[in-house]
Amino acid sequence: MDSAVAREQTLDAAETLFYGRGIQSVGMDDIRGASGVSLKRLYQLFPAKEQLVVAYLERRDLRWRQRLAEYVENPSDGHEDARQRLLAVFDWLARWFREPDFRGCAWINSYGELGAVSEPVADQVRAHKRAFGEYLGRLVDDAGLPAELAGQLHLLAEGAMVTAAVERSAEPAARAGRAARALIDAYSSSDRSSDPNGVPVGH
Amino acid sequence: MDSAVAREQTLDAAETLFYGRGIQSVGMDDIRGASGVSLKRLYQLFPAKEQLVVAYLERRDLRWRQRLAEYVENPSDGHEDARQRLLAVFDWLARWFREPDFRGCAWINSYGELGAVSEPVADQVRAHKRAFGEYLGRLVDDAGLPAELAGQLHLLAEGAMVTAAVERSAEPAARAGRAARALIDAYSSSDRSSDPNGVPVGH
DNA sequence: TAACGTAGAGAACGGTGGTTCTCACGTCAA
DNA sequence: TTGACGTGAGAACCACCGTTCTCTACGTTA
Image 1 (spheres, rainbow over the protein chains, first blue to last red):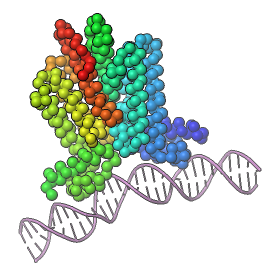
Image 2 (tube, rainbow over the protein chains, first blue to last red):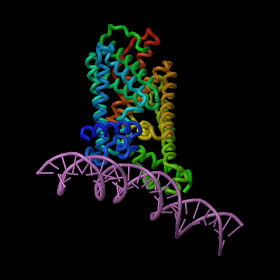
Image 3 (cartoon, helix red, strand yellow):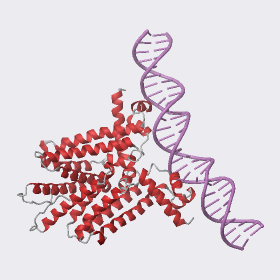
Image 4 (cartoon, rainbow over the protein chains, first blue to last red):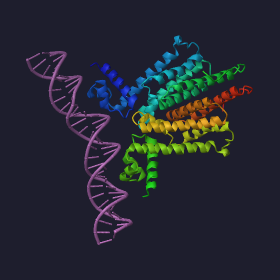
């Protein structure tokens, strides 16, 4: 089997299993069984389980942020102006939460499980969250809104992920979207104080 | 040794170790060593590790919510009106985040680690988050504000916990507090439209 | 064809962890 | 006093897991 193919199959299996059942609940033998990659090959590709975990988080990070950006920046979804793109983040979260295998944020979960005992895993989580925060920062900046708002929207998004996972519901995404809209309106009206305050709530 | 004392010592050790290093990284022998309670006694008190985990989460839930309520409802801290009490939640979060052994939300961490493989643990997490959300709901109601706001503040608080843990910083609490104030102002002004919109940002 | 390198299957190894068992000891009731 | 009982210390048991090793089969190349 080609080495690159084996690597992808390994990461596919690792992602499904680690994300679905937690990292420590999954043995290397489970990954071998699910991937069809022999144990020997597995250890050639990833000399230790921790490196497989890091690779899983890395690849998922790239894909996750790409999927988000594709949705947010797709003009055919009606995200033409910067403000709509900002709110589209929360629409995308709602779609993600509704996926049948949704089980919370992979990085938050990994951090809870291994953040205290594995520095490489903790670093991956920090890197992912920083990248997500910076993406929000760029969207906020494009909308001509202050950086403070980006940090606040980041908290709403994180809170929505946690709450959606625990409550097994996609509703927190919509709730976070309404809060985001209220905050955006508040910041917009404080910029240009002649604006009426509008309706900060509601769909 | 008195049974009740042994139980408390066991839970003390369990709390320190589980919270500090994660649940699966801590063995029953570690708990025996840290508590001074023999393995035999340990298994008399908690017939399986999972039951010890649930008891740890239960006791911590009671104490955590009590500490929060004591801070929020203490008039000497200047929390005389309902709106101030609402904002005090985020001050309290900041204090919690600054504690030297802070390592995120015990329930979020436990959920990431065991939520997928242990229904009793997942139930504990859901119960704790529901109780916290209901407490926020009561505070919001006392302030004469709509229930929707409570849900939004809940998301901010959860996001602050996650972000503070990952970034190892107490700053997310203050950020969440500013966002909370903006949301409260927005909801207040939409209620009584004669109110000036005030300054929704800032400290 | 023969020697060789490689890959896969799965056994083996060393360590760990949850749980139970043994055994010696102290305590209390009859 | 004696016997039943509860206790603590720690060994023992058993399963699992990360990792390595063995062995066999097969394809490649000189």
